[in-house]
Image (cartoon, rainbow, N blue to C red; front, top):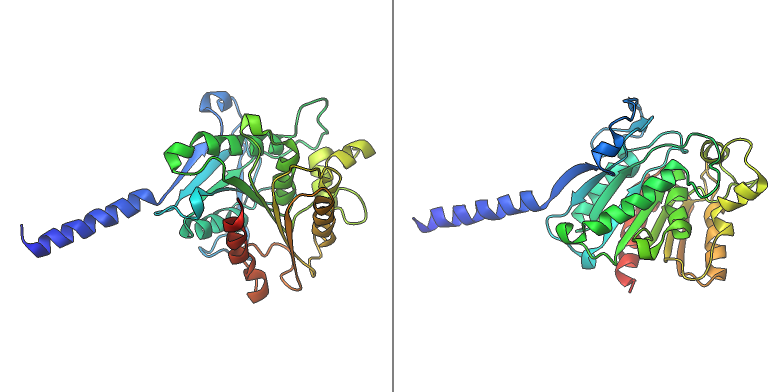
Length: 303
């Protein structure tokens, strides 16, 4: 074999390895047998605005089978961190592209394994007893799923966190309350983008509250699902970003949670920006684009 042929062969082998190592795969969150009787009701709509980097802005409704789409990097970095990405949608639909797959591609390129959660949506009725709403069940299961595949995916099971956007931020934030370290469902860090936090007036996002716990939820249930009332010592560190010009979910949601976490002694970084409005995802203008680099730097500083 000539030297040139050998070099070409080596380059081809390296390219093949990179293509195999950097992968995108979707998996059902639970064994398919458990979902075989689920009605085939899922609906995907294409919105004609706010496109992502691939020209999409799809929303998913009537999710019957929750899934995780795993974006594995070609070369792992940041000490094997993995992030479960939880899109928003007011607990009415899932903003799967702009707050899911687009973020996943960014973190994949940073050497971080990113896992997009497509979760079931709530019924609108307040669960009784210990039963959790469907989105909360799926988010807990997604964190467990990631940890159970740590060896296969080359991630550190002690560096599995979540990032949630809007109502997905409420869902991600509730993992700090509901997650159980012994069961593998507690995240190690939490990032929240323009999150729904409180279900109390005057700063509540009424649609998220109605869709998750019902229009007739008791004051006790409203308090139970208001994240700022559940802050306690020992929760994972939080990173919050919110725009002051957000007219959908007021920035006071993030302020309230950050203050409650600080009072409880939980490490928290709050970044309030002047512009970006709601749903800026990776960024809508220079100021709202800075958070992602700041988040990665914050992540690297965590123990």
